[in-house]
Image (tube, rainbow, N blue to C red; front, side, top):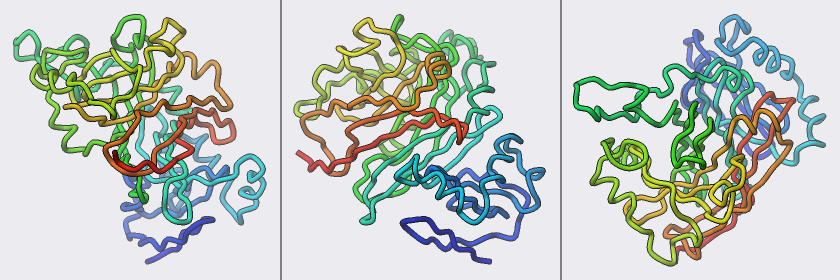
Length: 344
């Protein structure tokens, strides 16, 4: 069976499989198992509901009811148009806690990126996993006793991996989201509970080749730690960025030394570059969850400080923003205001 999905900028014909048992697809573009599409406003997301009602979905009931309420003839979409000038299309979603983490995007008519985004639902934010503190993805048997202590021999918190669409000229391929229940080093910088939102340029399999081990800030192989700390040469090195340190399965992290929290200011939100073997490998935003869940910012942005040149031609964002969307019951993290940069 086929059904047609429409939004303001494109029409997509998708195939609906016969299995109607489950709506939880890791990639909703490739696995639509017995679901029908609901357009949420705000240009927010395209969501999916299972035939037969909310009882067949493992989405939280309040989210399910909210999705059902916005299904229909599109009147809700028009009502929301005054609040939002663009729609976001759902690319991926994955469960965390009792809710969901989602990647979304908006493209221009020529297929170039306008916005790429990550959203975590309030239901997820209220039920984030805390025990164990780490999910076991980034661990190393440091004392050699043949066992891995999840508290003292693991890092990385709780990790989720999602994907972005292959938009024209978009250098970012996939997303790694880390919920850090107790934070991590350096001390007095990122040592409070927070979200790490990594937008990866580096290929997924190359990231996986960065081994865990006893060195670095967070359990990285010693040889790979040396590669991670290898300086990015000019003119690809962002001016004024340095410290914090390398992690297994990630690489090095460098932050703006003249901005909070590196300059002694309060840790609320920050922008970070990731490096490995002398290359910029990811762009990252960091959000202290105590601040985020208390302030619930309507919209707060950071102007991204670019390196003088890039190694890969493409469209890069000038700003990153965070918004709490009460009507959507989520927190949205975006890369916006893209501009084309030719490789130097």
